[in-house]
Image 1 (cartoon, rainbow over the protein chains, first blue to last red):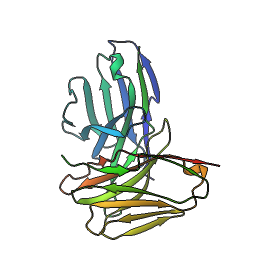
Image 2: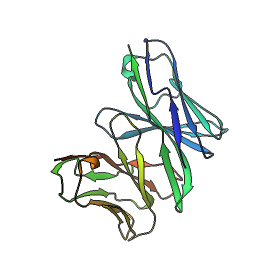
Image 3: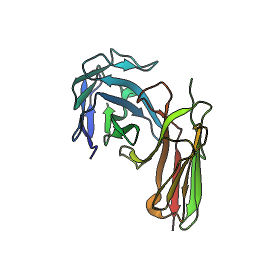
Length: 117
Length: 112
């Protein structure tokens, strides 16, 4: 149980174009999902908290107009990187929150490697 | 700003050795999780600890939550090459719902 999928796993796009990444909780409903970014050999950096049916909450320094988040259902959140630039190249990972073991746990997708040329 | 410090950052050991990874904060966690991540993949949840002083075991891995719920440790007995990876602690600070704050990570390499 608690499986999260992410699509696509890898994407290469040209500078100036937009890319959409999907995150799905496959066997549970998640009112809250999270989007992270990870640079090589570093830990995860939280970008935003995605809440079903409401606006996402962005962390300080993350441009909400550049990283559009939509959480249209209890099993799907999407991250759209708009007008992508080479510096947006990174590993993007989503997670879905699940209440278990007496506390909220996060289950992660396999990640999306974005390369902007 | 709530910080979560993890040590050591890097660890290279031989198969069969024991090791301990530490995770510390000055703030209280409502819960803490340990993850392992392999290159190019998402983190995989290993354990969640909630109660101060709690000890959980997962085969050769032993997780301990500090009495004051401000720190945690992961001990691996008789490490194997399959244990190689990035170990991340992540805590939910009191009053922050399900939002996780991640530690800096410990990169473990176990060689034959």
